[in-house]
Amino acid sequence: VDLGTMPSRGCKVENILAVSNAGNGIAVGLATTVTNCSAYINTGHGIATNSGCAISMCTTYANSDNGINTGAGCSVSACSSNNNTNSGILTGFAGTIFNCSARSNSGVGISAAGFGTRVDNCTAYQNLFSGIEAASGCSVVECTTRLNSLDGILCSSQCIIRGNNCTSDGFSAGDGAG
Image 1 (cartoon, rainbow, N blue to C red):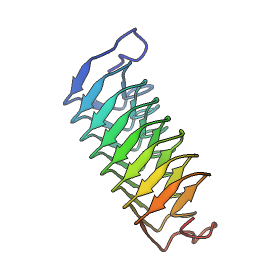
Image 2: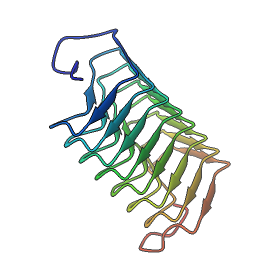
Image 3: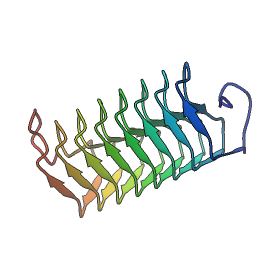
């Protein structure tokens, strides 16, 4: 499904299975809702969005780039992203990642790459880089990380890191919790 290259906005994408596509599995434009979708083994991102989107109850697996890749001001909730070549979930600034899991990705499990993003009640397990990375001004609250090769949580400046459980991270490099 490719709504990202068209001037689309305000669409609803529901109950889609995107498997083995050349490029992104699901790509959407501005202010779009993506619900109950799965994206597996695509040569780009599993799910890619522009700004102002909401992604919920979706799964991504074994995509050649990020599992879920969003623009600014997006929310990602109740999603699972596993075994992707890069990060499991990567968001732009001012986003929210809630109640998600990222496991065995070849990059960072969950990356709050933009200023002011909140990561809440998420799990990052056995990712090749850090479990959760947070840019300046982000919050990481009530999350669990375990067995990530680098830090459990790696944050930049002016972040709130509270109530997390980081165990057995940093066995390859890094110092564990971050």
